[in-house]
Amino acid sequence: MDTQKPLIKIQDLAFTYSRKQKKALDGITLTIKERESVAIVGPNGAGKSTLAKHLIGILLPQAGSIHIDGIEVSQSTLPRIRDLVGLVFQDPSDQLFCPTVREELEFGLINMKLPKDEIKVRVAQAAQTMNIAHLLQKPSHHLSGGEKKRVAIAATLAMQPKVTIMDEPTANLDPQNEKVLIDLINSLSCTKIIISHDLPILFQICQRVIIMVGGQIIRDCSMRDFIFDRNLIVEHGLDFRFKCKCCRAIHPERFQDS
Ligand SMILES: Nc1ncnc2c1ncn2[C@@H]1O[C@H](COP(=O)(O)OP(=O)(O)OP(=O)(O)O)[C@@H](O)[C@H]1O
Ligand SMILES: [Mg+2]
Image (tube, rainbow, N blue to C red; front, side, top):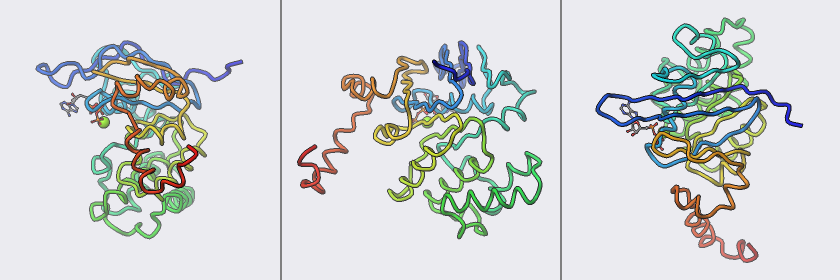
């Protein structure tokens, strides 16, 4: 029996950045249940990041509505929405603004009015998990791309949101940190929305796939159905056979039986 309750409800959501442009989101209707792990995929410009920004209220609906845990996303509910939802931005430079990495990790926790001791513990845990403890005193604008991404992820996870959204979380990460992140995401019991072009990684994390094209959802299916539908994958620019071919070229003997 399916006992998970709906946590995110989006109804007829539409959004245009400027009057001259076509809609970046066009009639998005979607329900995500508590503790689901959902992949959002689609070509560049499909509207994935625009949708993510709506879920945390950085952009507000021009038409339609979004409810998270029964709260409608609007200007007046933003503080409550930001306690519920954490977003790791596609570009960490859009997310990081504090003088040091430590302050970056503390910022959201101070806003949540957590006790000082709790903040200290959460910062230390998040820093250790994302392997950034040695960077805590550094200014975030002096970090490498991958280090910035790890700080942005740590800052979001430290807040322990009920919904964690990650927009291209593995971009810029080296393979070792990529693996650390995948294990970490899999260990989280919250609701997860992962936006990525990296299908093999999504396959490790998500059970459901939403495909967006031109601001619309054109398919909502299980990862299993998606992964075995080669036409669908190729049609939407997610073909990973070239990647597999590259791996085979490096270690042909390891792929002999595959
Ligand atoms: N700040 C902005 N101002 C104007 N138009 C924008 C802005 N941000 C995005 N757009 C436009 O909105 C559409 C959706 O963009 P969005 O960033 O949501 O796509 P995406 O699916 O996340 O793409 P990608 O895979 O490249 O990250 C695109 O046509 C884009 O050019
Ligand atoms: Mg994007």
